[in-house]
Image (cartoon, rainbow, N blue to C red; front, side, top):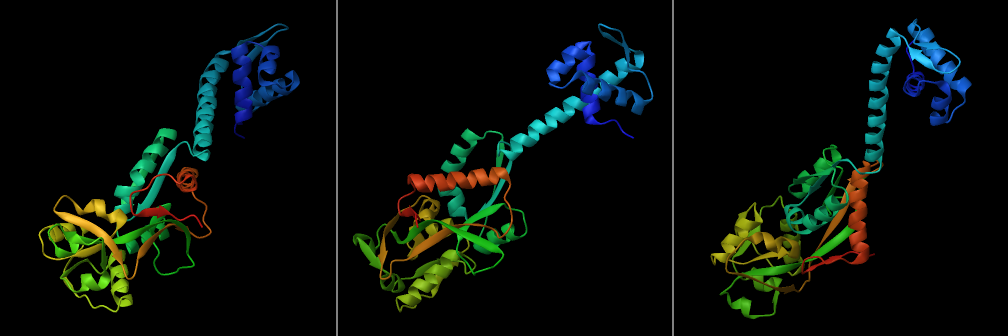
Length: 309
């Protein structure tokens, strides 16, 4: 039979206090309970740990060594429980999130800064990628949650609407359409259109918008990276359309943005978690911060807005 933590803690208290009366007061138990725990420990170990008299106790040689080991065990338990409490309160651990590059670079940095200010011992891991890769990270458990566009419905995922951003026309600075306040999808279709790759959620939405406008706009060129598309636009090779949160990623260059209408197209971004799965406490705390920011209507980049209903 192994010694129990209760027995070891009782023995440490008695040995440190050099008596049962003071130790019982410190532990808020009766002397008889404490005496029984120490006696049980001696019986388990098969040695005498204390030499008792009417006033105090003396440790035997075995008692000295037992005290050294028992203190290590009790302290390790106390430290471990403290760490566990902090984890359960969301004060330690890792928040693993998967998200689109535009969200990672434009929307989340300020949120992460606020979160780390409140919980400095929580690490944040960001896995950015395209929509399907992001959702895959949630489904396989690599990410606690995702912030991404609304893809195909899945009963394995739960969506919580968070924010939306509006598509804008992206034009070379010297382009004739840059003189207008508004540009239509038909206008863009009449120009060489520069698209992101077909695996991007942005591409899916621009294709749908051209179809809704009754326009045909086969890409004059396409690239997997939005910054590359921005460079092509800046070089005067054509025009494009991007959601507001993507615009800061286009990079420096002679590019302007204009309102895009007929139709107005918005991209919805959701918090996505695995259905019927409890989140780690730190991840829950981060999502609480996102909901707090939405409820308070904190500032977001131009062209984006919190979804409040």
